[in-house]
Image (cartoon, rainbow, N blue to C red; front, side, top):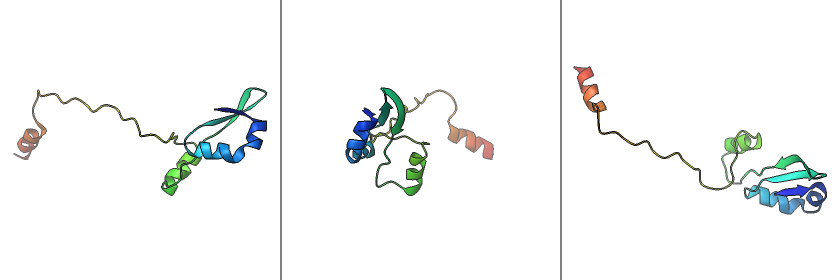
Length: 88
């Protein structure tokens, strides 16, 4: 969401609440972006809050998207057999 500096001054509390809910607020001056407000969700571990606050981690409030699991291939030698052979 883009917000002009004037609107930011008038609605600061509302916009900060929206940022804390995960929305990124982009501040504009003369229709050019000059800053972003990114909220830090409440109820997080202090170290995660600090990381988000420094910009090292971003979270939009949703569930993390994980990569699909690797497909296992039925060919080859099982690891358990390799371990038993290695032990002698």
